Image (cartoon, rainbow, N blue to C red; front, side, top):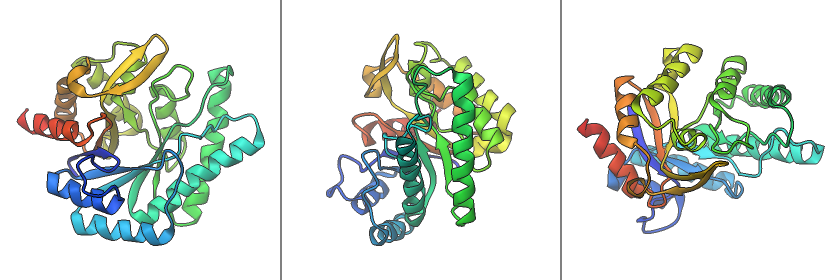
Length: 274
């Protein structure tokens, strides 16, 4: 696959705001992937999903999808947990019709519970959903995201443990969140250390099917505050790109900067200039 560069959603310069129009614009720009942003809900029917899939084949664009933000697999209320599961399953099912390879999601919040209690709850729910999708013949990989706030489940150890213990689950590596969690984790040695952890726990093949988020990031002691454009942030993206190149990383690198395709192109150009 090589390392592919793209945007979180339709490029800002697309002539139309439709997904199909966005795929066309990505090809024009020389970008290779896009993450469908279902973050406010999966508002796409089956007919539209088939059209999207046809467009991905026409324009040579790889797809993933980000599930709705309203997911908490540690919800204490049964109705909230059921709704969270339904949103993630809907993302995987409609996404599969679009041709997505991965469904990215924020797995949940600790809700003042001890992390050692939260982990087995989320693991059990993911096992159930991954098993259900497998029984349907759905091959979309479920990717819990490395989160940027300490109140959220999803540090690197939790994600790697889930990925080793639940078939059909792999991590979504958000390096901006990784940085925002501690205010450090923003140098070549630290990026390499994270990639080495992935390889050691999941095997070298995991570095050939990465799903990465990257942008500038503003953060506080509590973690992530908001995304920024790369050049007005302290994100050492060149060092990350060097680490990815040195490790022979492949997969999708999705730019979440506010300027989307501008930073996606900056990342691609910087990577190939290394």
